[in-house]
Length: 423
Image 1: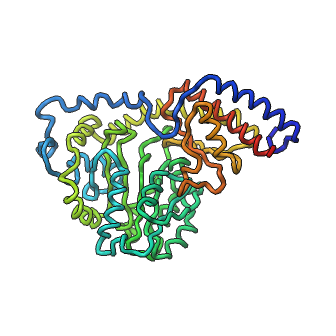
Image 2 (image 1 turned 180 degrees about the vertical axis):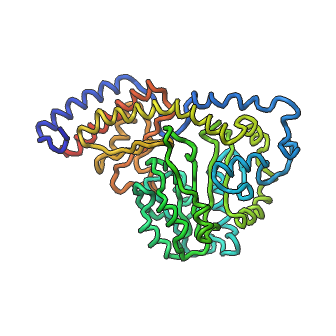
Image 3 (image 1 turned 90 degrees about the horizontal axis):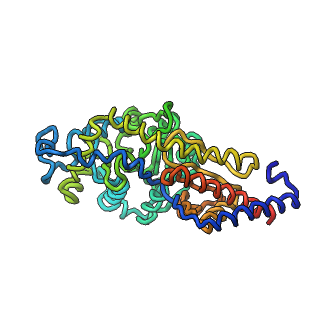
């Protein structure tokens, strides 16, 4: 029976039983952190040979004969640019290989826009107001960057095809709207891959701001969970068709491919944008860590090597996602008190409670020893207007730990829902 079909007496009995289950879980003294999408130790172990990828004097030089221990090469070694170009579907000339964090590249890119502007346009810091579009549910760290820089965050609802493009196209008619955050493949947290139509409309839409920019964070473009992965249309190709290739900045990294704290990041943009970025980048740095770039190239060898490596990741992660989804299907679906995605890749499961229950579920889980991402974190300013979305990160705990955690999660959803209905 669905909870909303129960009378008050049935609901009270249901709540009493669930409260007993919850109290029993609290007595176990669990301590699990599922607040962020971190790789588990087994995933990190896959890349341990990378540490020994450079074993002789001949290994310290890239294909062009450059000694990677020394200064120089502002935009990355040739082999790294070629690898990331293939991953992102662009030309090597359109790639800058960075340090360990694509988030840092995004932050630096926004700072350059703020301080220097781009391609002759007014620096954003001199504009009276700047608005940035934030598809939600979305990535909290994206929202935090633009909020920190004083921009006004404008929420755009996510659909099964990506951001609601009818709304986006209306909003970009405002010249103060300067950009949009996008996680286009296996989006954080919903696991959505943008439809071809959405990509085409983003590339072709008319914008009032000549320096409107799409921040295309393709963090999960190779993080498939099945042998039938989603397919994402290449936005750079679509922008070229429409003469808007200067509109998009693309980002990715190996943070969840090799070592999270010691991977390699990259961004891609039009050659005009790359040249413009390098004018200020040359003042910021003499060059990023080429030895780490070289280690990764020696370890993976090429894109086929990366894809083979990612299949090993999928073998580790698929059982974790299955454990969560099976529990939700068994415990929550019959009661009609939640909705969730079944992603084909990425790092998260997006769960929607009944309206007004997400904060309570997160609070109950924390009190019983399981820390989740804060309710509201997937929305600008940390405010979910319906208080319903919770991002589940199933990657870090072991399968045994995860089964305990999701059992508790289901109990908390039931308890919060019963409290809501009885209230």
